Length: 140
Image 1 (spheres, rainbow, N blue to C red):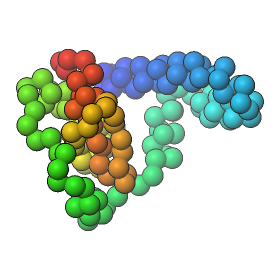
Image 2: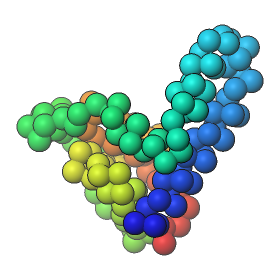
Image 3: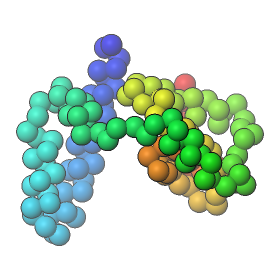
Image 4: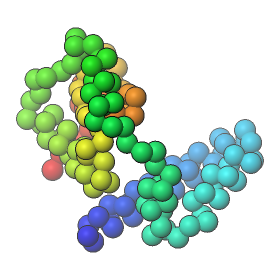
């Protein structure tokens, strides 16, 4: 449980760092957007951020919907043969989903695409291109 808190705590730190990095760009566009984003994160205690995200998260798609989404994906471009390092990286990504209680919500698929990309398709499938998988650090 303590390690989960540390991981969540690090995630919050990274999220705040990203927001602070984006602040100058957003501030030049609209002060109200910046104020709204900062208010969202500062009105809650740090320990409550995870619960806040859980409360605004949309419900998962049903298993039948997920199967329907998978049926719409083209069969070509699906990468099925991965080396040991790539399988470890995917397993690490699945552990992150498991940490957040979302491992049964998403199907993670590696696709053959020329550019590094990660996308959520129809709220059910996480598509990871092989180049994006290559950019991930070595899984432990």
